[in-house]
Length: 551
Image (cartoon, rainbow, N blue to C red):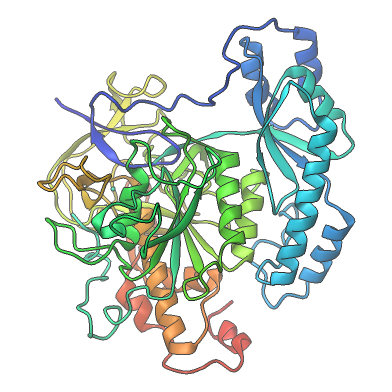
């Protein structure tokens, strides 16, 4: 019996038939793989340091003989930053959850002055501390701009020096995220013909979506058809945070290109591809996977999200209002805001007026999700079939999945699979993670979408006919959000806040029950959401609308 599996990499992602060339993520790339003497007494001392969070994960590589381990270092804020935090308390709105005990410090990054000052003081402080700690045993991987910290590969000796610094608040593991796709557009009612009452009237014009993923092939005919030298009228900017260069095009991994095509590919008719959910939206490509890797480090994700904040208004006519992130990892049975570094980055993004969508994960979990989907400031998206596509056999799932059977062809750590002997529109897929704290469902399997030019399985070789997983569901929801933002701006003259985007999608979705766990959540219904928007009226008092929307 042939079985399918998920390709694992920097997020959750697409479903492919088992084939050579796609493997399990290799984890942290490091030049420290050679064996090194282990000072067990030193490791014991490090493990007992209260600043070292999740010490087992941080020290495991050192115990196994690696020369370095990859960490994220959090620093004390400056006096200037504390003053900015106080000033931010006067902001008109604050993201839900930002006021809870233990939440990251809130800065009103929708305020350009606060955003500029915070970036200046953060970058100055981080540079100062890195200079103080400079050593051959310290290799800095990322310096952050909106949170006081940096990521680095460090030896045990340097880690001890870092922990001893009074400027250091805590040290956490720089974790690795994995990749988590016929068109789901009709199912969520995003296919009403142009010229008809919404959403056909609105196609995402005036809004940009950032795809933080494996890169986007800007040469694809539906993604701008080439650039000079990289970007074009569709993909108008981006950056490669993993390799630290200005070229965010993929190196062999088409995951990000597929997500971009679902969210905002241009209108066309090529096989089953009819364009993205928001075909007139612009795209930014943020490549978070290193060359020859299908995994992403937390630090590279944080850097990508910070890049989006800084460059939100590079094109004032098409501000970045949405991030799609079809990556993740881990299993969390409740909101995971204690994952301080990525949580802080997510709060910063939302505070800048940008909405994040992330795949819930493909492990078949009932009551749990991966991160960053489990962060309360992120909209988590699970997957439903868009149609009856016949029996789907052998999804590889977690050992903790609620519906599974042993199968040795799956990953070495799981060796379990799950089947969907019948499929139907709006049936939750066997592999989709679901939980009571999940946000939404959106369409998934066998999405016909863009891929790296010349590598597709369709007659033109430009399209992937089988993209799936919650990696596909997330950009469907992200595209829907772009339509909402475009429509609201056309009707009212202003954009929605991230909380308002979430409320419209939740309150106007079609309720779907995942029978694996008896959890019911809304599946995106774009026509209903757009129809619920207020009429053509400029808003003299934005606070009044917030009250109406229940925020």
